[in-house]
Length: 164
Length: 438
Image (tube, rainbow over all chains, first blue to last red; front, side, top):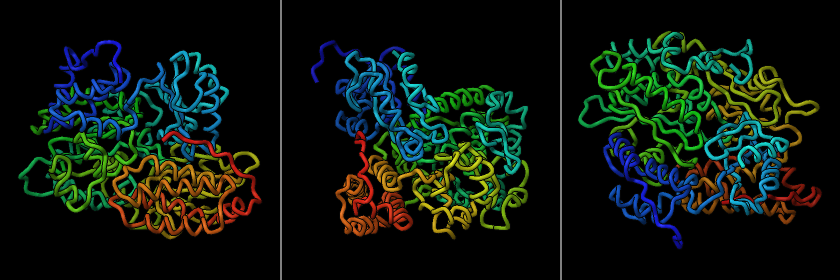
């Protein structure tokens, strides 16, 4: 992917200290990889090839190894996403309680054309997610780091406004 | 208690006593409620004594497999020649299950205490609590509680004044159901893709970082302090005349039900009573059609089976299903069993780690065939094809994700074959199949 702005390093200053602290918890440096990738995503909003290269050099791994790990875990974004990333649980327990109508409402009110697409204003990306582990609070929706319980289509317009 | 509801008088609240009580989250609040007495008592015993108590309590793994906990601990080498590790499996992602989430949200110190006792019993230097990445609130609460526990000398270089060092860290996952499989979880801690490992070697011989490791579920570990405090005989007594299934179990009830939530009952409690009394029964004007009693990976039950099923390990097996993780999914007469089977198959296809052919291909083809049936383009032979595929997916792979998908298909076709046939015969309107991502 073409980089229009210069890459800003993640593992410098406080972040470097944070990572070093994390690495003391494990007997092998590689074990810090998931935490390191979380730090990358916290700073950049996604995990770019440049970020994978930086992470690789910091942990003594290869960029291709990092890519293998990044592509395995669904929570690491491999491309930029909207300012608010919306994940609606549509697995069976929520599905039978109307989760697909919640998805439809999010697509409509955010202006996202389709699942996985970002709205034209760059504010939202909406996806279906498999089981969020909150089945008794159907339908749970993750908006960035917040889990909102008992979401119904009627509540969607307010949520979209709140996160705009 | 049936969080978020008030406790029902048929419940036996032990693990869930403080659900909804925010004060129980702090170290001071937990100590006020009797916390950390069991850890102190354990640290004054020999590790083998602690294992013996847990063994004789009859506690079995609450994550799904139901393996006796004390026996699992006793597999760890007695003579220490290498570092030992404890992993706490908090990667709760089995559809229908949300009990570990509530344990961590409301009683984080109960889990820390249970982990510390287990860690001492198996002589581990470090516990890793592996929490799924989506559990942002439990992650926050657990981290605050861990900091609190370190600050108050529960953990660290002189744990509770015992002169022993106990360390405990949280490892955040990043979205992968399969990491709840114990060997995949260890790979994920090591910074690898979460692919399950071939066994043997078993974790007690070679686990995380190649060292002797024990992995236990959150609910299992949270039960341990109560067993230490009140004794194994007390715990054994919490059952329905069944020596093999003892204690209480948290059941997460979701789906078409009046009061979804977590309910804690003694082993052997009737499933029908859980649904009709504790959860308030079906929604207005609806009737019970089916129920998955132990999380999506166990066979589905029809109405009659649901009403006569007893909730313990043996009672569920008698009905042709399993207790699993205790995630109860209730379906009323409005549910389309063909569509929901497809949704569950889609879950397994999405979550397959893809290293075994039978699973990678089998889950994907199961979804495609079910979508074809739902679109009104199925043929009679498709049901045999699905069952044949399910047979090829059972008992042939490194882990049981493939078997779980097959169990859903086999059990639903067995009990609700007429619904599949209606789509194939064209007597039922084709369902619009929403296309999922991935």
